[in-house]
Length: 294
Image 1 (cartoon, rainbow, N blue to C red):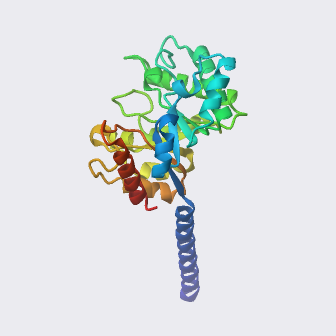
Image 2 (cartoon, rainbow, N blue to C red; image 1 turned 120 degrees about the vertical axis):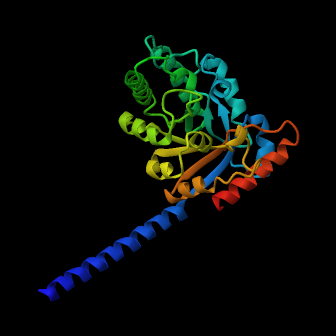
Image 3 (tube, rainbow, N blue to C red; image 1 turned 90 degrees about the vertical axis):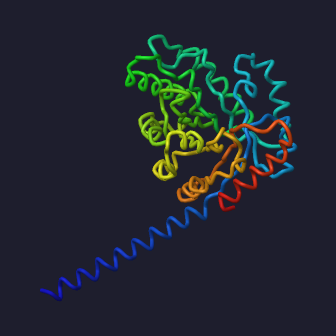
């Protein structure tokens, strides 16, 4: 009897060891496959200088880049200019203006949806793969409004939008914002539940290191979110300055991205000095590369 138990024990121990090694190799493989691109939230007028420094992309603003209220015929000339940018647009932010209401007793989903779909159509024409859905003002719930109802309204809007853009090569990434900016969707952990409930291939998640730190959310949230994360923002916590300004260590967030095999962009969404901005761009890129281990 003891001999049988010993054989069973040995087999289970070996199996556990093999599984552990396989898991370790899987994690190492994911980290090896990770490829992080670095960009800055800026217009195409800065693309030449950013490219020379070594950046991979720019992140524009939806209003200025896609001009959703402009008729299509007029936008053709704008599109032609944008296609001449020295760097590609990996993403655009500032999605839904605060003049639209996505939650509350009187929503404007229909008009907001048309605005959003126009922006996405034009993103597709320009080859922009991601649109950042922050829009804290548009999604903010009125004081005293039922939180569960506000969540349901936002999820309903996202599902409708996803269906309207299903055939486009554009993905919406929900951006959790700190509680000082909005009262709906404030953490990556919360974002996981939103993305899962929306359950649409065109709706995914963004991780903003600055907002995560404001909400005391550590890198493990990125590991939990995994492949749901398709784009990232970065800034130091103090003053929302560029990486390298105060020397804050954000390497833990980059390690989490590597651990989940993240392949995508990290945009500097931060303040820049009025003088010697190119030096600040260089320092930010050097800092990000160092902390990302690339």
